[in-house]
Structure formats: C-alpha cells, structure tokens
Image 1 (cartoon, one colour):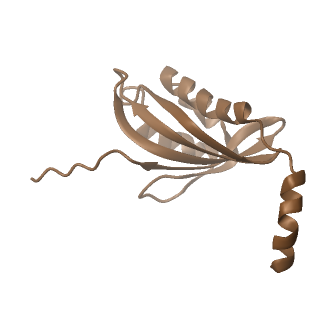
Image 2 (image 1 turned 180 degrees about the vertical axis):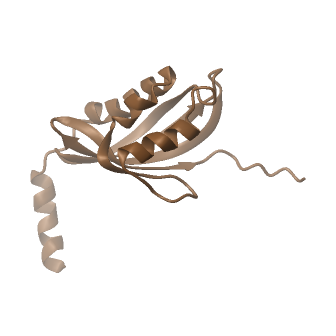
Length: 146
C-alpha cells in the first residue's frame, strides 16, 4: 500500500485530464434530449453496461433497463427538462467523474426538484458515455404536520 501511495502522485502528474467541455456536453445533451422528450436519445448517452444508482432504490443495470426506468419517471407529461451547473470534473483521458447540481423542471419550466448528480463517464470510440449515474435530492423536506 505504501508503495502504491508513493507512486500515485507521479502517475497522476503524468496523466492526461479530461476535457471539461466535452464531459459537460454529456449532461447538456441529456438536458436537451429531456426537453424534447427524447428518452431513446438519453439512453444512448449510457454505456451498454451502465448502471443507475437512484436514491432509495435498487440499482438499474443495462441500457434497456435504464430506458424502461426513464420511461416511468421522466415521462414528457411529467418532466419538462433539467438544468445542470456548478460542475466539478476529475479524471483522465478515458475515464472521468462529473459532479454537478441539477434542477428538474416541470412542463411549465418551474423547478420541482433540486439535487446533486455524480456520474462516471468512460470514453468509448472517442465519445464520452455515462457508465455510472447517481443522484440525490436536496429539495427541502416537507415538514408540514398532518
């Protein structure tokens, strides 16, 4: 372990960083496709063996299962779009992690949910694809008494 820690900084210093604009473009495509209601296009942003890690739920594995999940929760009659900002991007030339804030919009463009998203991306055939996708809801809890 000590040997690995000793050599990590040298390896990291020689590693290529991901292009932040190219990594951000994946979530921007997600937002644009969601605004159009094109869930098929969204599913193509994921690797074949991608995994969603939604809050308070089991993992969803594979592009087909991800599409089925999105067809339930991101239906165009319920969700009007998403906005991403405040990015942090880490990684190298072929793998990256993007952390961002997300706002989900209703069909009238009003914010209905706020959260954070962490995605792991892999470069496949020269294109960034989402390999793991995890998010959390940071909207204020409904504390009203029944």
